[in-house]
Length: 77
Image (cartoon, rainbow, N blue to C red; front, side, top):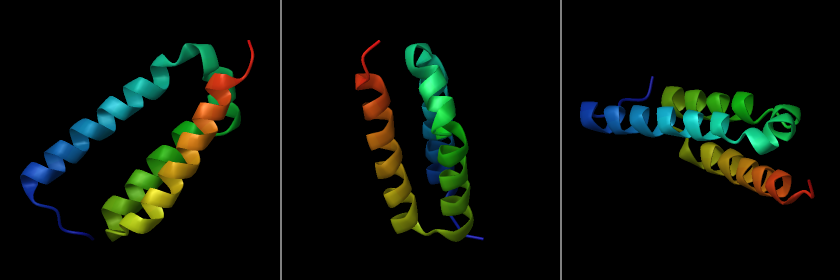
């Protein structure tokens, strides 16, 4: 298990909860987000990073997710 100072852990938890709310609030692309499994990929990446402390893998996953979300948001309605 990766050790994180308590204040950093609270900051990380706050950011995590905020990010989940942002993902759920994007109703106009919700179908696309479900298709590309954004929620599962994001929560999995955060969990793995917290368990292993491997930030590089998290960064790669979050960048791929960012690109997929932007692509979904730019899709013509």
